[in-house]
Length: 204
Image (tube, rainbow, N blue to C red; front, side):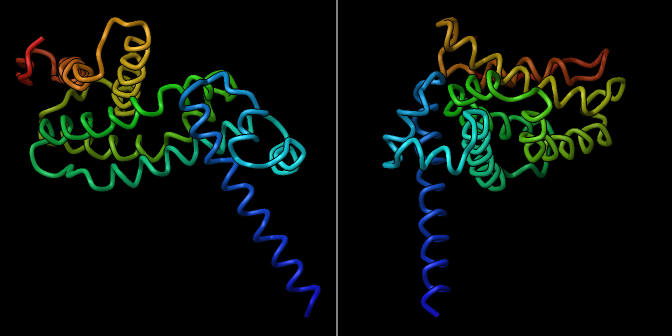
């Protein structure tokens, strides 16, 4: 009995340490994509030995932090109404999705340095599937273009979102204008050839 309790206690302690490390990594890398493993360990309240006992490399820590951020982002996106007019649904998705990208843009920089492009796409598969469904419906309703693959259009949307984060870092765009810029650009890209691009409002 004592041995079982001891094992359970160790397992619980390990899970708490892992959670603290991932939370600390999310915070530290969210502020500075170059944050060191020592800083992450310090913020997590664990030693470097403990950190490396659970994560063998910086890439593993970054992967775990990015996974947590995307999972929480998916929970927020679940609340976005993607029914009704596909154009308005797309605008709502961009507004909500952009804020998630904006908050996680430093973390994404860390991920791009540590993880493969394939792994980053895999981590984004949840948001991508959500947009694929919306784009497919918009195509069926003759609102979005059908001459380009759905996967390409989804990639265009997410690439533009990430580019907006780069523009903000470079000081060429402000966060409060980003959603409008993204929506306007994406609607122009998604509109079928020969059809007028819908107005989004908001000005330049």
